[in-house]
Length: 133
Length: 354
Ligand SMILES: [Zn+2]
Image 1: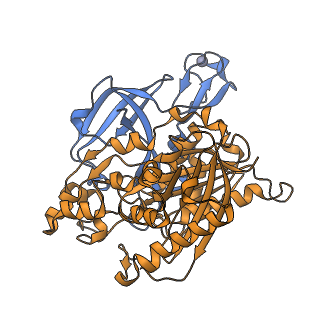
Image 2 (image 1 turned 135 degrees about the vertical axis):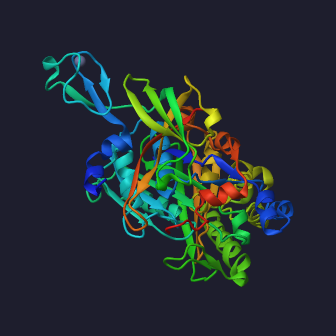
Image 3 (image 1 turned 30 degrees about the vertical axis):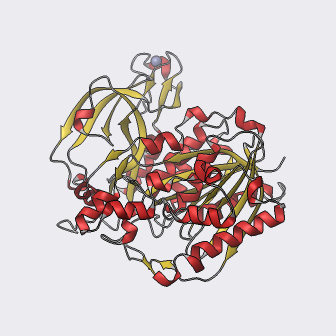
């Protein structure tokens, strides 16, 4: 991913910034320019909305052969999370072993390193999740 | 009212390793080593944690406990000796990640383990400056580190990771800063050259002419000017390179064990470097009552000490401590790892292609 492409999505990756439909109140992550329920009525009525980062695990998988950048983290956990405000998000669950994760477990957002462009390039940061103890 | 701390947040990584496990690998008696350093465990950052992620977590927790709008913060300083970038500030990423950007000033500070307390002084200065000259109402200083000792070196038993963010202002102050003074000399006790992974230290200079002299001088300067004696304080905290030095300096200055217990965290989590004394102060504020007096003294190799005299205000009673985790609570939840996992986490193994 290019530095510029990541930078444009910074608010989303750092702060879980999504959108809220002012017509029906549904929240979306990542942001949508039109509400899939209200359609044209929502045009111009989609406001920025910051998600809290709290949610529950709906489904998860354990990755044993991941990207080279993640080799010090294998096996790592990728989860499909239902955010408390509504929408779903795919995220890594950190600071625990695979056997500590279960469907229905409560998670919170943490700020972590997502990757880097080699040893001399930029470092990418953003959201991950961990179980609430 | 005097300016001071409006809110604060701390962050300690979840992983821990014991001196016993470190010693086993190097043929050293880790249990004895832990005893002599007064360290039971040290925190270890996860592979995806660094000074930036720790700073952001601490800053977010400080904001959670306060009703201050992030956009009203006029300055953010991050003091660390382990900034991930040589050029590209940690402070800009923190500013963006707590929603304080873009209308603020930001900078990274360096002064071994006391860069964060130098930032506290700078933050106070900006707030106290005439508003028509510097219109800043809130300023944040963070001390955070993910420090490393060379494998097998004595420092490996103590060098840990953690961070603290203090938000300063004039309104809703929970602990006013009555006085801050410093003591600084050119003492080559500990250093790390650009590009080197691990620090070096001059045995001859650690201890007496470095830590003890600077902490003592700075503490005495503040006590003298305040007209305070050790017995007048409810709490005191000093930089904690290990669990022993702070006990020794406290005794030397005339403080009791009771006075320093709320601010002594290195025995549980290791030396968090720039976070060390600041975590001590946070631990004290976690349990502080209105009217209590606090002495807090940092130390940075190279060398210098910043001393602070603080008074807890009535606002501590309405402070929303419960919106985040206390130092004691987070120090307690540790996931213990062995030395091999620790090596993998801390990138001490040379991997193919590196
Ligand atoms: Zn809608």
